[in-house]
Length: 205
Image (cartoon, rainbow, N blue to C red):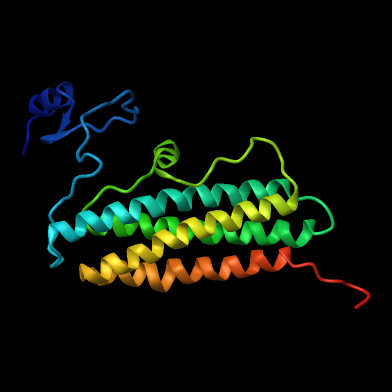
């Protein structure tokens, strides 16, 4: 049994029975070197050669960057929707935004599964994307629809190239993600957006 003197000494040293005293104060202003640099790989036992994982991470990060930009375009379109089609497009754009956010998460997590580092900062994504930046102001609905469709096609072309490359490299996990989730989701969204560009009489045939 510890003496009163021993307990007193432990208390004055900031310990409690050999354990460090926990402080409720936040530890601010911390910094340290990166644990892993962008473009490098950790070794994970997934039975896939490093060369294949490097190429998959490169492909995924480019598509991820474009997807982050497209999601932002959809959110901007959602906020700035106007005119007779306001209600349906306001809701559709937000639905597509949420679906793109899900794809962003899936793409980023796949990069991590391969041992890479996923693009996470929108400023980094802006450096990698090939989707043109729109004006900062609001645009007319037909222009917004065309801009979204062009962005989709840009991504779809990269996804199809990625599907071929990952199949050749036998990266079946990435191949399944690109074909089963990303490609089909984009094709569905293109269909829904493109139908709003069709001139269709509402009263007289």
